[in-house]
Length: 219
Image (cartoon, rainbow, N blue to C red; front, top):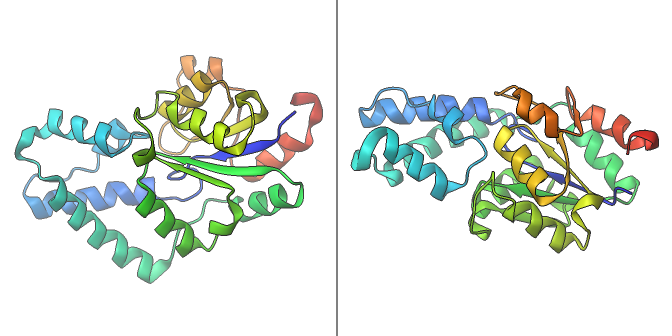
């Protein structure tokens, strides 16, 4: 029986992966490296520490993380102030459904806690979540199972009682390794054959999660 739903954040709840491409393009040009948005595809689902290693492999230690972060923040702040948080289709409907039906709700995001809380407050959804686990709260980044094991532990549920919603292959591997029920709603990257084989389901949007949960014969 499903007792809890665990959400990824970027690319799943918020349409921020495409924004990150634009932000890193902007930051890369400001720093003289040229557009760096392609790095999103190499670091999708990873926390800051793991992403840093990928950037150093690509650009060497010439890349200064603080400068990259500062220019990226400049881009994001300007966008959010003008347009607000870009919510994924069906997010609010799903959150309301989960609350009404007494599911526990968690977030397992590779973003750091400061960024996650800012996003939730901008979107006015912070109060929906019982548990928030971020990339700077665990040792090993996705695709390791750490973050999902921590989320299910804090929820007081066993992993098989938790549905994990993810948009990235790294996230799906993390949830599957932790023993949660992995459901993918692809954003930037489509699942490979190997990923499809470990999925419980692949959906088009968050609205379809409601149908999935209502369909007792499938769960």
